[in-house]
Length: 414
Image (cartoon, rainbow, N blue to C red; front, side, top):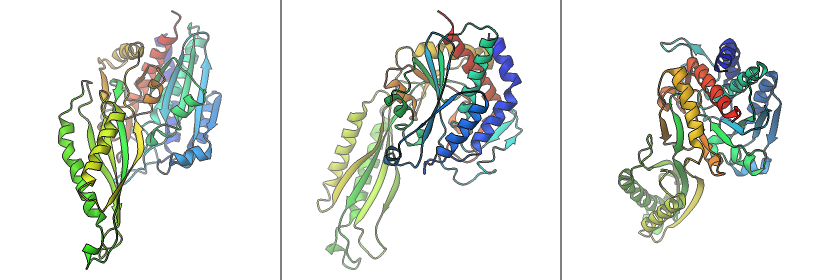
């Protein structure tokens, strides 16, 4: 059956590449998170491939509460017979392109390189590529079944649109609504390793409020920036202790803390009355997210007490738990590793990554899940979330073969 799968993917690869290019050409930046148009285009393209596509529009109030503008999540289901349900999930929302691109980030330009043809564009690697990987894996399985392959079970494609905002109204929403309950899941990833664990993430917004005054008479006000600077100093000092905490998961090192946004003040000649900043605290799999948040809030409160005339408010923006392997992950990882060895000629390791992804929502329901898909050996090689994001098309073909073969193995009668 592997030969039938490979032949189909090889013969249809030009169409797969064109499909990916069409997805890259439709912006789906998040923020602002106006992604319904991309879902509509993806739905049309998938229907052109012969799939029946369910479009699940998330209610506007729910979308706005999540800080986005529009979301329609897509599900494709194909039942081969009795057996397990295997879900393949990729996200179509992307970070804004930023500066420094050699090409229009939405042009899907293909260049030749020492690694073969490479496509450039925002989202081409993370993770519109795996819309193509998973769609063509399913097409290859359908072609193999038509040739008599004894497949059972169901394959579902979950194409969602809020991973960059946390996934609560993407995969989590589909699961909460009872629209799916797979037995296994594979989420977007890269081709040279199987990812079974990842960091969690806590985002807090800290608002320090003082009292404005004329800069010529600063003692008549309460300097919010001075108090904020004291809190920030305490946070930065804490980073040294975080570096001493080590994860046992290969690919994950230590917890991290970053202050990424800050705003405040009125004018140069006015004592600032309010300063707001946001922080990002990465949570390794060995840590408990609730404990991390409690300790961070306590640190901020303690630092703020040095400035009793100023008030502090701490608001949680995001709490994404780490991905911890669920029972059954070995079945998924083993199948992917076996076929990656054959296709790529390498022994792909099982690793963790210092990111957070939608995979955690499946794991939270006890669903075994790993990350695997099209891409090079690292995020840096793909320029993911960076200018000139790119995908080696040979990696797209290889990942499609590997995913199709691995899913076929899961769907074979036991």
